[in-house]
Amino acid sequence: MLGAQRLDWEDIKAFVAVAESGTVRRAARQLGVHHSTLSRRIENLEHLLDAKLFDRQPEGFVLTASGERLAATARECIRNLTDAERFIFGQDKELSGDIRVTLPPAIATQVIGP
Image: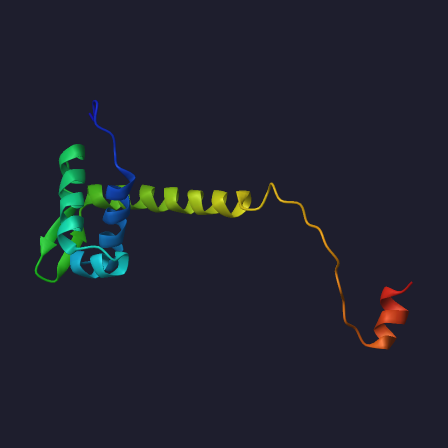
């Protein structure tokens, strides 16, 4: 049980980056942070959840069953937040100004004009 501690969104983002890239170094390059920062975030997350999220192998990090479950949930959260952001962005703004349309004269008079 998490108790007083809560999941840190930055830890989740680090986890997803490593899960998708397969290595801490590659994920760190993609995120523009030091690999030791990502390693610490993964360790913190595993400690907080009391679960092993990755099998560390010479060729990279492989998700465990717990890691697969968390990755699926985290990706869904990211998708939902992205969808909400797209929906909300610009909702409070009204369109204003002139609209100019350039058309061939035949279309302008016979299709748009009437």
